[in-house]
Image (cartoon, rainbow, N blue to C red; front, side):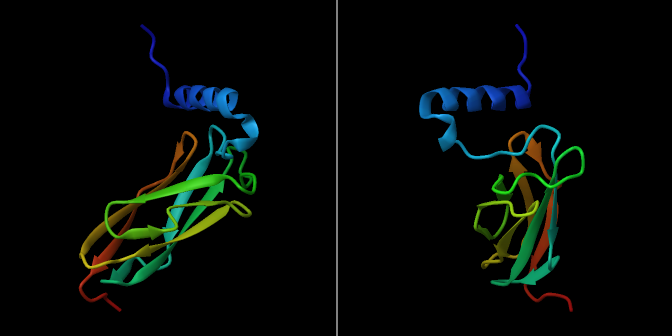
Amino acid sequence: MSRISRGSAAGLVLLSLCLLQGCENLPLLAPTGTTIVVVASDPVIALYGESVITAVVTESNGTAVQNGTLVTFSTTLGTLAPQESRTQAGRVVTRLLGGKTAGIAMISAFSGASTSNTLLVQIALTPTP
């Protein structure tokens, strides 16, 4: 029995959706080999504070992905608003909202078969200046 890679599986899912719904209704996802790097405006925020999270999305040749490429963010702590957005000039922005729990938020982003680095943002009782 052969194994299907994550990229191949994603391609099969997209092809199936395209056949069922029509390709014009599918989201634009990053092509294979895309690099996603996430950075934070503030690596430490207070409870209920916020940090602007930016994902820079580039194709394997170093150019920005096509405008409108869907990027989805995830976090282990706090809330991301919005959780998904579309690129403009290879960038997409969301906000990490700290909430009431202190700790380390592990934030990442993905599009298609491409996944970002894991970004750490500390949500602290009182942020260090």
